[in-house]
Length: 481
Figure 1 (tube, helix red, strand yellow):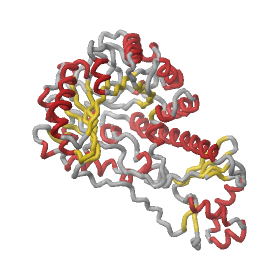
Figure 2 (cartoon, one colour; figure 1 turned 90 degrees about the horizontal axis):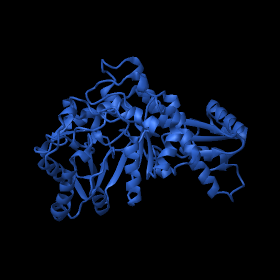
Figure 3 (cartoon, helix red, strand yellow; figure 1 turned 45 degrees about the horizontal axis):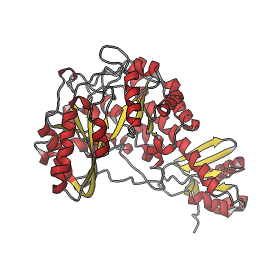
Figure 4 (cartoon, helix red, strand yellow; figure 1 turned 90 degrees about the vertical axis):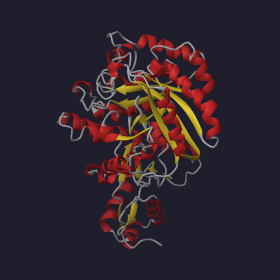
């Protein structure tokens, strides 16, 4: 039965391209592509919203099938519809988890001096060259496996600093998992991941990577001239030549390395060449992440490093349209592609507020995120006191601050339940930070929004084109569902 009165959804997104119009209720994600007759559809929607009464709308337009399609895609909704869309669970997770990503700071020092390094000098104790003891690492893995539900999976991330500076510990962790914990936790699974700058390769790295299927992520900010400007060695010399050689060496050994670019003001206008360079290096995937303007010491990066949000968004679109990378291998497009499903909604941006991305430092202290290491307000436990992990006082406070419905500028955004305001680091460490000027606060908000909107628009057009190709034989109407 049709509602007596209707209105346009408050979550309407309208995109135009090559004479076509793409309509979508951002909270429902049931996109509607209008290939021809866009002007007619615009008039229909404007009049329907103005008239309101269903009978009068149909008397004027005499197109009930179109009216029903617009209702079905929730472009038009009943006038009394409050359009309240309950998102997924935001009350925390106190029971067994389906998955946890455990970050182990094997080494809190590094041999590079990246201009935008997230590791604060004080919180990460970078200069001290702190290495994690094996008892801390072993207990951290055990603690997380104990919290997994049967059938759950633990991702063990070798992180730093530069984790290869403590490669012997990584091998001990793997052997402990395979030879001791496999028998204790037969109904749980795990996998290994290494985030490294790959400036050097231990002699036996390839053997271990192959045997235990360790995935690898490495940052390459572009060809040498771009990369060396932001990611030099501690002595100031460029690191690109050595990294590129090691990536190719691993590739020749049959080992895949995913590549990530941190987007700054220095490479924002070169994102397509960066994507091409990642391809030329033989990368298994390509990622673009805008620089966060803050370190774990809550120090603000120089404004000269920050890319213009509009240019960052344009760069993302250009990379996508270049066709250099399949969407499944291009971040953040692959992340949001998996979320473009009808009715899939979230109110929190990541697993940090749930305690699902614990970061363990060399002392055994646990923090909610790699950016929050060493900050007492975000300490959620210690591996030697597992009964207190995660500290629900901390996680509850994070949930309250980060829940998208509690963020004033997000409440009316049509995409609020897709991105949930994006990476929370800015909200936690920049907003309210007396060191952060208005320019940095503005950048932090705008770069997330601009990037996400560019990604979603590109993906919706991609999905629409795919759907129309599959429905090429249905030529009786000009609307592709």
